[in-house]
Amino acid sequence: MNVLENTFSLILNNNFKISWISSDFANFLGYAKEDLIGKTIDTIADEHIKNKLSHSKFFGALKDSSQGITTGIFDITKILDNHGNIQGYLVQFYFYDKQTETEDFLVFNTQNIKMKKLLERASLVAQSDVSVLISGETGTGKSRLAKWIHINSPRVAFPFVKINCSAIPETLFESEFFGYEKGAFTGATKDKLGKVEIADKGTLFLDEVGDLSLTSQAKLLVFVDTKEFERLGGNKPKKADVRIISATNKDLMEEVYKNNFRKDLYYRIAVIKIKIPPLRERKEDIPLIVNSFLHTKNKRITKRAMEFLIERQWYGNIRELRAVLESACILAYDKDTIDIEHLTEDISPFEENPESFSEDFQEKLLFDEKERIKTALEKTGGNRKKAAELLGISIATLWRKMKKYQLDFK
Ligand SMILES: Nc1ncnc2c1ncn2[C@@H]1O[C@H](COP(=O)(O)OP(=O)(O)OP(=O)(O)O)[C@@H](O)[C@H]1O
Ligand SMILES: [Mg+2]
Image (cartoon, rainbow, N blue to C red; front, side, top):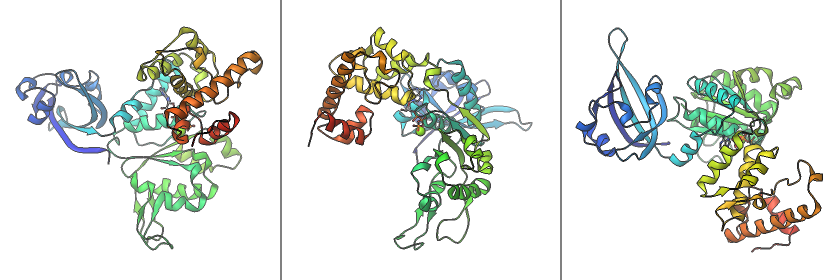
C-alpha cells in the first residue's frame, strides 16, 4: 500500500472556510487550532484546491505556517443538506510515502499547445474509469502519462501496477496476470497473487500491449470484458476492480488490419486514445525539460549547447535527451555549466546527418565517449550496471564499448 496510516481531517463550509480542524492537523501545520478556524482553505493548501473539491480524491499539496510543502492525497466527502445542496466538505488528508517519485511524476513540462490540450483531456479522462490507450514513439512519455493519469484519478490511493507485456512469455501469462494457488503445479508451494489482483481498486498499466501474443490477447479479453478471472489451480472466479491503461509504440490499428492484434480487444482497451507527439514536433519543450533536469543537478547550460540540443531530431525522444544530459553531467562533473563538448551522445552520435561532422569532430566524439565511460566507471567503482545506468545505455552496449576502447574494470 502506498498510503501511510496517518490521516488528518478538517471540515470546510460552503465558502471554503475551515469550520473544524483536528488539533493534530493544526499542530502539524504549525498553527494552533483556533488560528485556522474561519480561515479559507488556501491558507493551508495550494490555491487551486477549491476547483478540485468536486473530485472525490486527488493529489495535492499542503503548506504549513513556514510555507513548507507536504504532498499527499486529499479525500473529499461532500456534506449535503436534505435538498442535495452542498453545505460543506469533509476533507481527509493522507501522506503519500513515495513523495519524491510522485512529485516528479506530477510535472509534465510543456509549453506546446498540442501537449497542453492533451493533458487537459487526460485530466478529464482521469476522473472516469474508461480505458485509455496511449501511443507514441519510444521515450515520448507514455509510461509517465499513464502514471500521471493514475495520480490524478480517484484511484490514486490504490496501487498502480505495471505489466510489461513484451516481457511475458505466453506460457506465463496466466500466472503473471491472474496468479496461482498452492499446488496448482509442481513448484507452486504457496499462493501467488496475480497482477490484476494486486491492482484491485487501482490502475493496471499494460505497457507494450501490442506485444501480447494472440493467445494471451484472448485470455486478456475475457478479463477485460467481465473483470473476472480465475487463479491457476483455483476453482472459483474472482473479481478485480481495475482501470486499464495501455501503451504501445506500434500503430495498433495497423496491427489489427494485419491480424496481429484482436479487433475486439482493441476497441475495449482503446475507448480513449491519446497520442503523444514526438519531441521534435514540440521543440519549445526542449529548453524546459533541459532546465528542469539540470536544476536538479545544480548545473547550467551555455546558449550554444542549448541550441545544439534544440537542433537535434531526438528519435529517442525525452528518454534520449535525459540520457544525454545525464552523461553530460558526468563529463562536466567538476564544472557548473554544461557546454557543447559535454553533449555528444553515446547512443547514436551520427544518427542524423553523418556528413555534417568533419572527421576531426568524429574523432573527438569517440574520444569524449571513451572519457565519459571511464569517468562513469570510476564514479561507480567499476560497477557496470550502475555505470550503464548513469550513461543511459544498456549493460551490453557498455560492455561492447569497453571492449572497443580496451577499458577494463574488475
Ligand atoms: N514532459 C516531461 N518532462 C520531463 N520528463 C519527462 C517528460 N516526459 C517524459 N519524461 C521522462 O522521459 C523518460 C521517458 O519517458 P517514458 O518512460 O514515460 O517514455 P515511454 O514513451 O514510456 O518510452 P518507451 O516506449 O520506451 O517505454 C522518463 O524518464 C520520463 O520520466
Ligand atoms: Mg514506457
